[in-house]
Image (tube, rainbow over the protein chains, first blue to last red):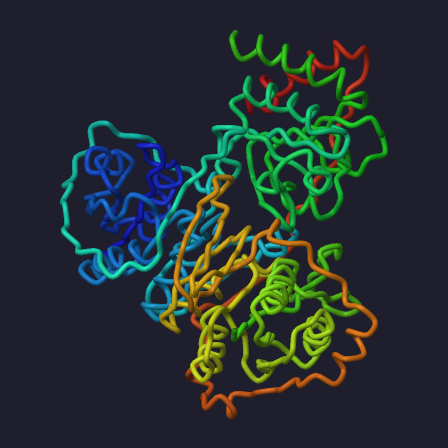
Length: 320
Length: 256
């Protein structure tokens, strides 16, 4: 029986869903494994048991006021101590801004391989991951030693929550010291509460929106659907919205259940970032737009007519 | 200031990817400086313009990579270093970490800049791995950078949130879109670049054996995703189309 360490991630007082997906992934690496959850932060012990309900066998918590905001310095001190104490055969965490940032540092310290941004696991040791921003995929193995992966949110389904599961939650004391990096301020994104990489629905706009003011009609549509708002490079370059929203080969790569492309042409760079979405809807006035080539459903017409109607219709559908 | 850029040669983002026998076909493809690394080159040159010093561009790759290094030199970098990886089979992120470490441990560094990810492999591992090996701090996904009195004042993108960070030099940062607008090489710049020093290093030069850089991971296959079939364009009055779309998403696709 192997031991798999799953590093959970907390945001706004609760676990990000990818933490539960990581537990499912760890069980795929070894069905009979002991799955040990780890969660660290300023105040995390009260929610730690959630990891057990999603399949972890026990959970280690480390709390410190020095862990309030993520820094690679502080987090790596704590996580290295946990890893050395537990000596797991595998480590799984989300490919989020924290996972992306810290996993390579841990892999460097451990002298190990690391497979980033895994979207599926075949058998127990072959990892599928996108390359060229999703234009292609590769299948990778870690030949020996620690099986260390980060998984892309929204791809490997979490196990069903089992309220009846019990497991130990154990607090570990780790001294965090010699920090040089100072977090001066965190400015929360105000445009939408839903994170692009974890959103199950994305409403995305292109140059067809024509202005920053018009871009707001997408916010209304997104709000009704509980969706995140994204954009094409064209829309970002034209300053209709922030670069943080950009989806594509430069920008974010997303795989939501539903992607609604509004007034964007479907340039190859953009398509690379979203073509693996499960269902794609295109709204464009140009019937020849490339985006219709990959869309499951398309409406040809003026987005300024269609989007408000669609928002209303969704409002009815979501309520009913 | 001793300013370094770690840079990768990648496929042009406009290129379609073709795969034969599990390998990406490179024949006839256009290559560029990885777009995120281009922001790093630009930022490095701006730092030099403001604070003085020297910009060295370091790349791991084959001899073709000289072309992209020359482009960076034409933009305004001073020196190029090519670490050849042709003799290494299936180099992975660990391999590149070890090659770069071997080079950088001999250098006096104030700042190293790289791209947030490379648009081909997309792992984003090299920056944090290298910084860790050198025992220096790093900040990824940087959208603004100022250096004052030996401290880097950084704005970082974290999935849409902005985080303001201060960290003393030396530091490694990786560039996110929005950091700057990379310049085009000027004609005089291109002429000058031809005479700038470009050093090529192999394993021997770095005092490494093949075992030291042996990859930890192995790619066993590459393939294209199943081609997406064009779906259907709805027809009829706009109101009907909208109603039909919502109904299809709810009842057929079951995504809302």
